Amino acid sequence: MLKGIPSIISPELLKVLCEMGHSDRIVIADGNFPSESIGKNAKVIRCDGHGVPEILDAILQLFPLDTYVEKPVSLMEVMKGDNAKTPIWDTYKEIIAKHDKRGADTVGTIERFAFYEEAKTAYAIIATSEKAIYANIMLQKGVI
Image (cartoon, rainbow, N blue to C red; front, side, top):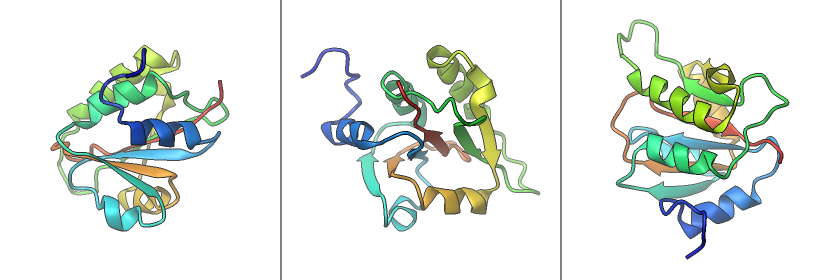
């Protein structure tokens, strides 16, 4: 056990967060995201039984968001014609505001298929059991 490390952060995830460098990206994926196929060139970390908000909060306790880009946090846009509601995005913005003074200003959206393409270049993908739709979030690492 280590002091100050959230218990939801597994040794494998802690190692990945440490390995990542400035501008590397990590995806925290919902339960519907094709983590294994999109992440075949990335490290895929299983966090089954957990939701995105609790993992996001734990990661942001350790992980600086990039200050050299306008939107270091990306969400998957709702598809046109899909009337899906995304209240989880408000939860994400509250969590981000706890850890980064820029708060919601760090958050942008990416069209669904462009998000998949960007996710293919991520350093790692965390596969969760999140049931909310359009709950995928990508973080770009900054510097300390």
